[in-house]
Image (cartoon, rainbow, N blue to C red; front, side, top):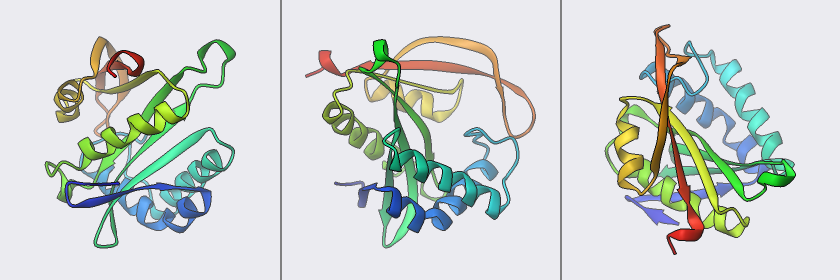
Length: 179
């Protein structure tokens, strides 16, 4: 897939392992830029690399799909789609770990990644997608612009890299209803 002058690639487990160093660098810069994406501190390269090897394992066993945005051989963004394993929720997926390198933001990369998630979810038979983002972050407006519906906000949901409690906004998108 192409968008915003980039290629969107779906990585298999081997591809995730092959790109682990680049994804680790992306994770470190994303956290350094203020996004928490599950980290309170900028992880060391080895810790970030280990994180991506765990993601590769999830890709290998079918729990996760991994998309990356690449321009001129450089990984500039990524997003994950996690299928929910519970029998009564197999129609649902969670979009997680949306990251765009701070130097590449506001170029349509996150939107291209989000648009690429939807056909992937449909191909998996998923009809309901959910995600969360820190309240007040620029991503909040982007998700709404892309048709995601805010379901509500939870105060004091997570600590940001500066150690402050942040509220999060939960979003959903019903794929079966938007054609």
